[in-house]
Image 1 (cartoon, rainbow, N blue to C red):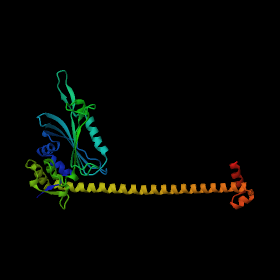
Image 2 (cartoon, helix red, strand yellow; image 1 turned 180 degrees about the vertical axis):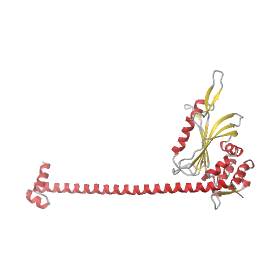
Image 3 (tube, helix red, strand yellow; image 1 turned 120 degrees about the vertical axis):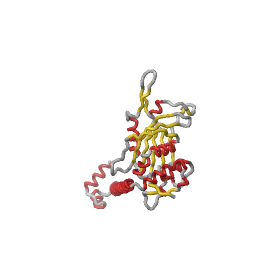
Image 4 (cartoon, rainbow, N blue to C red; image 1 turned 45 degrees about the vertical axis):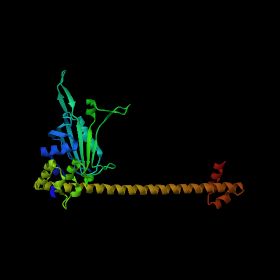
Length: 321
């Protein structure tokens, strides 16, 4: 067993991805295609402090090669989230990608140069789980389907490729005990069930990691000894704890507001029931007054019997006519 820095921490993940060889190994394994070259795009973002989600975003220009040897230049958008939060933030980042004028390449054609949008492939590392899907790695692949026949269309269209994209979602909590494929064996480096007494570090079995992925292990071992990495992990812990405290405060306030709303609703319901009871009682009195008056009881006697004024009895009789 060897000890490595925990890549769930942003500083460790960035340390890992700053090594181009290591980054190409990891991304190639995730997308299932060889990443030949990789260029980091300086678009890394964090959400503002005290927001309910902490997200690391890293974008790359990548030249990839498929099984048939075809090369393609794509944008790999990698996002890593520790906490469950608003999906709209992920959508906002995608919106930025689609609207970014730099996400195009110039192609020379026989007629004139043209601009072509780069395909986008999104990769999400989630420190939390989705509501329904329990697979540790989920690939969301587009498919062209003939609406009439239901058959898949294998030819690609630039129009469709420019307006849609594939995604890969990695649910870190579901990596525990999953070693069925080489990818899952590689992602064991993120398995939080291997955490030590100090959450900054994991212990992993080197023999379970395929030989070609050992550079990732060495890189994470090296991060253990980096004082800047260790200090920054402490800072991340403080930030996450403050965010969780903020979430708990919001939850507490929401519960107080909900309790007050329920009390007001109960009070309104009691008033409504009381009004209904008074109305029902009044109708019973009116019916009794009318019945007694028809039997020959005078207005003065009715007033005394039902504790009403003579005018109130007269009004009841008048309304009944």
